[in-house]
Length: 105
Image (tube, rainbow, N blue to C red):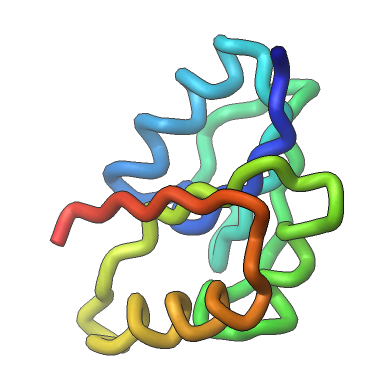
């Protein structure tokens, strides 16, 4: 059964591996990306939204009432060492139906 999946960190090392697999399995993905051009995959079931995973309003753009699961592949960046903490705080506020957090810490 296809799921509606929100993805944070889709252009990084972990997220870029996850996206093609999820699409191949028939899921519909909405990906939040600071730089959408870094996402090299195009697919009819893929929607890319420009935004930042440290901003609540940007996460809310991809986590909607029909989102079955949120996948976060966000990792800390050199420019923001507390990025994962900020993102996690927002996820607690949004309370997605399901969430899986994976990182290359």
